[in-house]
Length: 383
Image 1 (cartoon, rainbow, N blue to C red):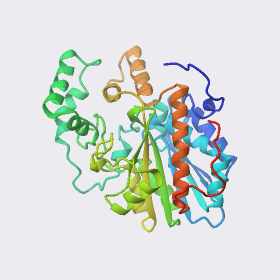
Image 2: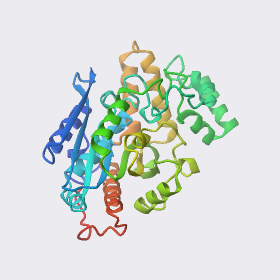
Image 3: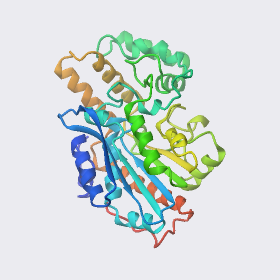
Image 4: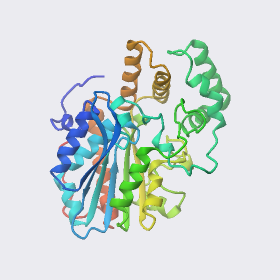
């Protein structure tokens, strides 16, 4: 669906057309706000031959005791959305002033998975899903027999899938139910490196980089909030607030006091997300063990679940078939982009509005002011 109207001239400044543009915009915007800017390059080229890197900006007011982390592109192709949210924050004088006056530092980590962002892949250069990769490798990894049963049909020998292939998957859903199917497919698996939602065999370079960033820039803060921006699950344009912390009643209650009672909890069955392990935000507990943690994934809906899974299946097939005809390869890559990013003013406006609210709520929570009265009453910003 194309752009029907121009809701705001600012939207196109935030939503970039590719990774290279998003990165340059982030670096320019961050340089105008702070001199604490650092880049962690990958030894790989992007889709356009560009350098790939995770870029980190730290904005620290004097005597800051609290920290809000905002991350993008944990799942690379989802970076179109997360980068826009970060750019909008860097352009928001009121929010930045509020943070500074409340003694809250901001750590913006742009493109945790730059390879996936550039190549429109959800996974990294090794087909690892970074949000399943934070495991204790060397110890037994979570099993997922449901995925093992489905793998050969999820990533078939030919693309597009045959009618028989689709019938096998439909029969599985009929036998086990749609929730069981969702969990088997998306919870994460560690047995099929060429599959979808593969968590890896060891910590990825991106995960190691993130741990270093957190130890270097976040570990001195006593109170840390984290918003990790995602796309894909849920109703189109709706930002589901997914609790990303431990099975800790105090952490969960605090997240709901910040962001509302509608914070969804995967292990309680109230989220569109499966109850995963190895999620990236859990690195905060080892990198910053002495802090108080309040973690949320903000997940913006795009397309129906089946369309999203089919896009991931196609991309996994393409990785194992680099000789695929160019028209099929291009169709698969476009399906991936469309599954995780909606190039439409209305969706983009919903994203920026809900992102701003979530950031403001986090600032209020970190400041110990759940009523939101950090300074003057909120002023609507143009998005």
